[in-house]
Length: 145
Image (cartoon, rainbow, N blue to C red):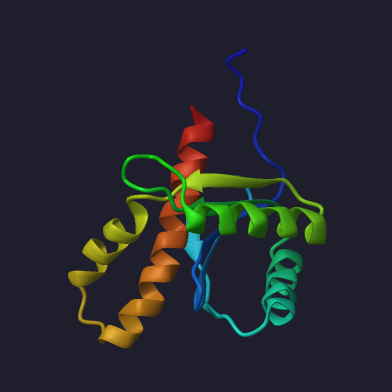
């Protein structure tokens, strides 16, 4: 016990919304997260093709999807959608997919970005990217304990 197995390859973090998907990827050791370009959603096929390219380009080995829970911790319609989305990712990419409680990440991302001078439109895309980074970092920190 005590020894931590380091992942081989990178972890992909996703903040999935109805219009956009925030995307972040870890470094090869699974310690830090960096945001990638936010994906504007069109069709499921196109969304998955885009994710396929990211997974291949970065040699992704695991995926973390933000799970939207109510502040009470209860699951709702949005979390049902994420369970379905996670299952589709597992089937499509044959990779482990983890769901991570993201209740506070969008609020935290908004707070961090309010301190910048981005326009509202740019901030929206940046919030998704920042939320994906926070989801991925939160999951990696928990796993590292």
